[in-house]
Image 1: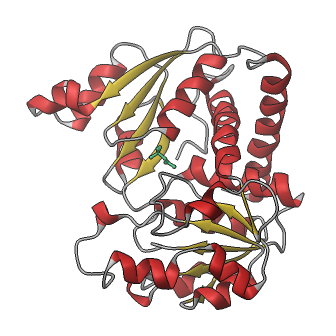
Image 2: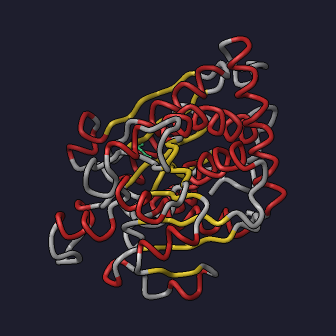
Length: 308
Ligand code: CP
């Protein structure tokens, strides 16, 4: 997605956030009569509920699909599932799936709009958009801001989408993790790679801390959780030692005391060397997803070019 398109979404999201604060709902209710399927084949709290709030604020009807209570549990394929839902004249699918490429695959078997709400270890575009929105809110602009992405880069769809979005907007991006969690192709990302968290903290203005994705790990990537926490956990002690103030983001859910200490995760104002905007991210997620749904679906029957 080009920079201008990202900026257009962020500006639209800013408008919706202001409207929510002033009126408590979206203006205009431009999706009245539209039906949006929230097809979450994998668990979610933040993404699912924020898409649901966004869609309802715009006047759309939401249809919640959960794999465990649908005919998927009886062996129906994802292709048949989507085709049957499409036959009920829905307008869009929001897809969360544990397989990389699932949203792209579904977009090829339906004429309806498809939004990727996180696919395997591949991408989580609206999470990156809300992270970038939050960073822009704090720093005023993204260009030349130094942002480190800390943690399980190898398994992180959030890292990949943020790297693409942030570098497109001119941010300087660093990734920091043990060598075992560094993607083999990291040199092609246009980012600075750190294996020392202290070096990364000295360099960065902000940290996007990632969850250690134990459910996606198929081998012994780290010696132990204690070892990981000791060497890569973002803690008060580490920030105080380096005397570096850090804006802290985390997409959630959080493994407290593993990738981040509770002190750092919960500190929203001074004193201290960190400021957490984790709950602001969640609020901004509603605004960003409102903008995405409106730009895809309002006043148009044609799928939009950024549907992936
Ligand atoms: N950040 C994120 O995707 O959270 P959920 O899995 O709760 O949606």
